[in-house]
Length: 62
Image (tube, rainbow, N blue to C red; front, side, top):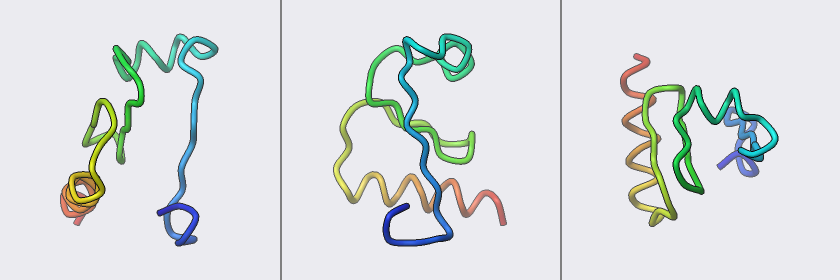
C-alpha cells in the first residue's frame, strides 16, 4: 500500500536493534504489523485480512 499511495507510509524496524519499540508494541513474533497504534496483526496475513485491518484502523479515526 505504501508503494502505491503517497497517503500511506510504512516503516520496517529490526526488533532486536530497537528493544524499546519491541517492548512498546509487545513484539513476540514476526512479522508484527501495527496500524495507527490501533490494530495489530501477528504473522503473515492474507491480503483480504490485511485490508480489513486497515479499514478497521482507519474507520476508528473518523
